[in-house]
Length: 133
Image 1 (cartoon, helix red, strand yellow):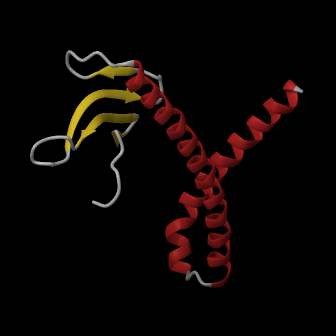
Image 2: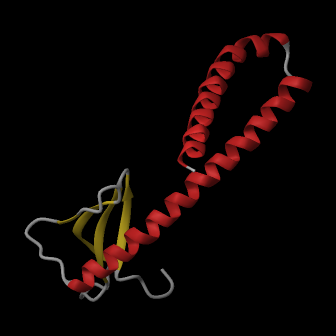
């Protein structure tokens, strides 16, 4: 590996990460990763691994990673929605210009139900926002 390794490594999990301290200062000059904590992004919980006590330095790095990770996930969420809009447009074009009757028959009911559900939710949420104003 080229360059200097980070002091901490975060193995991403479903709701957070396992946190490892990276160590290359040993006789064999091998990379050793010692798990020091598990973090949960959703509830902000940081659990030390085993009998460990996390230093302020550890906690500062972990909290900074959690804040950065929350920003990344929020960006991905909105990006996924914009991609869904693109897919809906592409699906419309496909249905209009390329789809066979058999293909349309196979997907029409599922698409109509999904679009109805989405439309109902969006209309309800918009009405709630308008009433709050």
